[in-house]
Length: 169
Image (cartoon, rainbow, N blue to C red):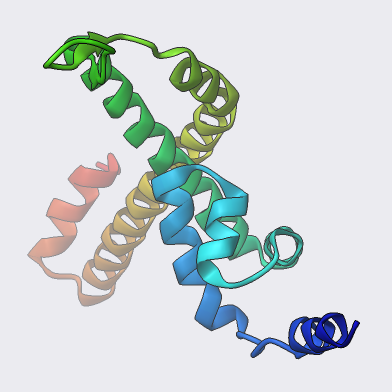
């Protein structure tokens, strides 16, 4: 009976609390490798519920989470392709050498589970890239307008060149 109370006392001792900044990079790195939230949480030293709560509370962490899953999906896809090409050597009873096996059912299940979320994240990322391009073009156009206005104010030869660019002849 005394052994149980000692065990309880040991398990009841509070674990050192890690801050979000301490555990989140470890969690995201492991999530990218494993595509497994529970495994990533264990590696980071937090409960998976804490990771899910952080995902809800921190939009940037949520984006990084999706990026990590996308990376994990890409890694899994490459691993699956490697297995499809070369198989896995597994021990065989009564044989001196292993037998090459091509059992990929688990990998296919993981791929299908992550395919939609990875595709959705890629679409969002692509859309963000398009927005950045539009902002860059708008900034260049604004700079051209400023040069044009400066040329008009100066009344110099740059005015003639600027009006040709804008189409004001």
